[in-house]
Image (cartoon, rainbow, N blue to C red; front, side, top):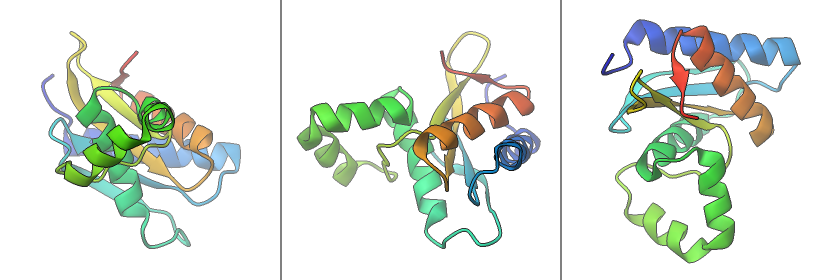
Length: 142
């Protein structure tokens, strides 16, 4: 598989929302992007705040841009804030350095896209992203 289909993206979103309901999380928003960081699908829960599309997509695209989860991007921002700040200001897509953006890989481990979740704590956002990826029958980067 070389890309995430719209059906897979929608399944990932549904899976992330299901995990959010299971855990009693705050209203989530979920973005799925392709390997170039371009939006495939996005959904925002009822009552979620309006800027969640940019945050969810920024977690996903930022992870892809640097080749690591957005959790690791957040760690990089703490270690080298000048680097992440400079990169984010010149990146083609938003970069949100907080957990919740997880890269999706094919069977050979090559990135084919990412899922970004926002709305609860970053740790819970990441749990929902991982659940969404699994629900879609996709594989998260290890």
